[in-house]
Length: 150
View 1: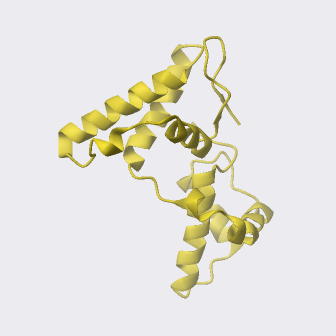
View 2: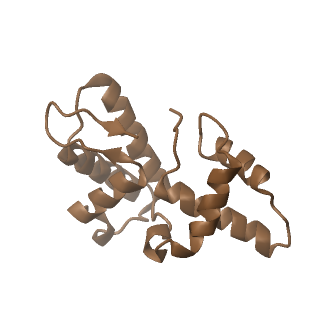
């Protein structure tokens, strides 16, 4: 599924890509960065250069905690994909369903390569809140409430 907007993690990745190209000595133009963003973030259309410019100007104001790398990006992607597939099948996806599926994915990863420790497998409400914010999932929790992404 293609997205219309950049979420927090994508904004951080965009800034990191710009900084990486800047330190390598390249002069990445805003157009090149916009063209890079479309396929990498599976956007429906290429972001306008003014959007890229605004993001880069505000880069100094981004909270460093907001741009920490995700510990298990492959698990997070699998969870996001699962949520979207569930949304096509049922009318709601609860917080508890998300946490249960995340725990199952972590257990599966742990049994495959023992990378995920028991401590990392604690899925708090704080983790859930940040997961939903990173992936722009809004306002779904109880039966009857649809999964909304803006």
